[in-house]
Each structure stands twice: as structure tokens, then as C-alpha cells.
Image (cartoon, rainbow, N blue to C red):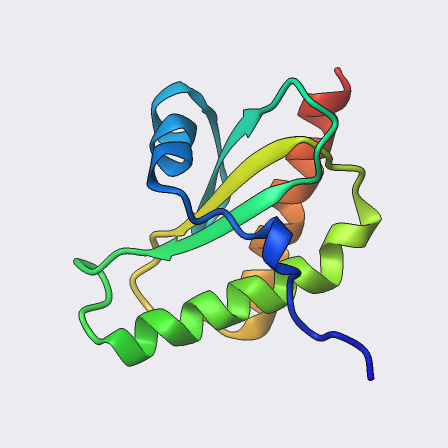
Length: 120
């Protein structure tokens, strides 16, 4: 059976690491998402977290749905980009509940921008 989720080693959970990404990391934005990233010195794999604001989406059901869409889009598209040793935080700031295609387009554009930024 094939694993259909992100491996646990690729999930960013530590509060200190999340704070470091927001305080000393850089930011990229698309139409409905932002990406905060912090390049690490070591050759470890990427770690990622997803966030949806409680002010824009007050119901937990909606926040969880959007995070599921973001995780799935990221999981399916990360193989196309060469991203290693980065801590990533995707923040959704749109007002409406998006379709999968909208989320996927935002995630793809952010990953493309990130891979170009890292290469240069």
C-alpha cells in the first residue's frame, strides 16, 4: 500500500521553528496564499506547515477543509520542484472556501517562485 500523506519527518510542528520562520524567514504571495520560508544550513529534507486564519474562517470545519486541500495539493506537486533544507509555512488568507483547482494553482505558483528564488 502506498502512503498517501506527508511523512512525519516533513511536518513542521515545533513552536520555536514556526516562530523562526515567521520572524527571520522571507515571504512570497499569490492570489489567496502566502508562503513563509526559511532556508536551513544543513542538507535536511523540507518541513512544512499549513495555516488558515480564524478571523477569516471562523468555523473549524472550513479551516480544516482548506488545510486538507492545501496539504493534498502540496503533496502531489512537491516532486516537481527541487526543494531541500527549507522550513515552509503556507498561510491561506482568502475570504471564501476555494475549490481544489484554485488552491492547486496558488500552491504551484508559490512553489515555482520558491524554486526560482532558491536557485538564484
